[in-house]
Structure formats: C-alpha cells, structure tokens
Length: 213
Ligand code: ADP
Ligand code: ADP
Ligand code: ADP
Image 1 (cartoon, protein in one colour):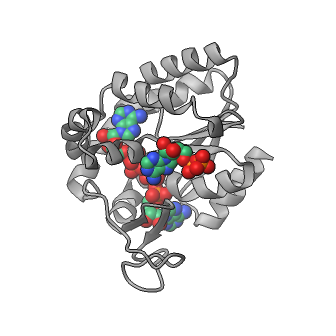
Image 2: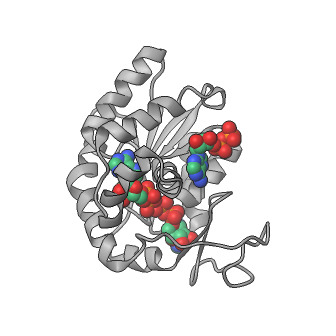
C-alpha cells in the first residue's frame, strides 16, 4: 500500500507508524526524522533546514521534495510506503503526484489524524523517543519501565529540541495554514480517511486497521 499520514505535531503519526509498517511491510519515510538526522550530521541540507526547524516553521518545499524523491528510489520502498509528515504543503502534494506519475503509481489512502489543538501541548511536552526504532513514549500516557530508557533495547530515550510549548505554537500555525489545505487536496480525490486521533493508541490502531483492511 502507498499511504500518507497527515496530522498536527503530537497527533500520533509516529506512534501508529510501526504498527502499520509491521503489518503491511512498507518502508516508513518520516521527513522530520530525516531532517533531524541531516541537522545532526551537519550536511549542507541540514545546515539549510536547521533555522526553520528551530523556529517551528516549515523547511522549503525544494529541500523536502528532494529528500523524498531520493528516498522513494530505495528497493524497500518499491512495494509500498508510509509517508509520515510529508506532504505538508499543497506544492509538496503536487510534486509528489508528479513523482508517482513518473513511476506509474498512486497514493492509496491518506490517514487524517484529526484532533483538537488543546490536547497537543501535553502530548508534545511529554514525548520521549527511541530514535533507532522510532518507538514513542509519554511521561504520562505510556511511560517506559525505567525513566529515560527504551523498554526493548535498554538504550537511552531522547526528547526533540523543538518539543516545547513555545515552538509548538508556531508548528500548529504552520499546520493550520499550510498543511490543512493538503487534506482538502486529497479529499477532492476521495482518498481521505478521518481518524479519531484523540482516542487511546489501541483504539486509533483499530481504526487504522479497519481503514486499511
Ligand atoms: P511532528 O512529528 O511532531 O509532526 P516532524 O518531526 O514531522 O514533527 O517535523 C519536525 C520539523 O521538521 C517541522 O517542524 C518542520 O520544520 C520540518 N519538516 C518535517 N517535514 C516537513 C515537510 N514535509 N515540509 C517542511 N518541513 C518539514
Ligand atoms: P506525531 O508523530 O504525530 O508528532 P507521536 O506519535 O510522536 O506524534 O505522539 C506524540 C506523543 O503522544 C508521544 O509521546 C506519544 O507517546 C503520545 N501519544 C501518541 N498517541 C497517543 C494517544 N492515542 N493517546 C495518548 N498519547 C498518545
Ligand atoms: P527498511 O525496512 O528498508 O529498513 P526503514 O523504515 O527502516 O526501512 O527505513 C527506510 C528509510 O526511511 C531509511 O533508510 C531512512 O532513510 C528513512 N527513515 C526511517 N526512519 C528514520 C529515522 N528515524 N531517521 C532517519 N531516517 C529514517
């Protein structure tokens, strides 16, 4: 399957991704993760992306479109993929359509993680991540067995630098202004499935499975 996950920061995209990936054997492309890796490695792309990311603004369309175009060439992405956090602007969506057209394939479904803004601050400020696996934890909703440690590997968990209440405000502004129109873009193609992203993780997983079955 070829899937897109859209939702504001903290809506649960990263939490549901491993479930979807394991069940349908897709490659998972998270532009946020790829950009953070580029920033950490101080690549030319990372240096260009850093300032916008620190402020909670979107990185330029050309940069992220380039990353996705490159990533979609990987053998593991040929049978299907999950795009997590891309496209985030209508221009990105149009470019994606062009990329897929060249390859003779189409997006099957867009999962819209619909949720009220009010819930997101607590989710974002309590988020802990195991970077290698993408496993997410939450200080209140899904704490690890040992504070700061991944349950499975025993490796340390990290927090994202931009997961603060202040930066969340600009990220939400960017979402409403630039990313919500992307949902309309796909609604016109009748491929959007709306999820109740405020429900507990297992219930959201159930909704995802129903949509994909
Ligand atoms: P979250 O998972 O909390 O929704 P991400 O990890 O996806 O956030 O994104 C972190 C930051 O990376 C964004 O605030 C933005 O600066 C940048 N970013 C990620 N994906 C894109 C994209 N498709 N277009 C532009 N900027 C992006
Ligand atoms: P996104 O990738 O959309 O930015 P995440 O999946 O990283 O969001 O989730 C943000 C935080 O909220 C994480 O700490 C995660 O453990 C927690 N979380 C995710 N889904 C739920 C849920 N359905 N209910 C409560 N907390 C959740
Ligand atoms: P595979 O099953 O082929 O190993 P993965 O989902 O592990 O597929 O990764 C596919 C690609 O998605 C990676 O090579 C990388 O480019 C990108 N990716 C996925 N998760 C991350 C991450 N946490 N950080 C950086 N890139 C990631």
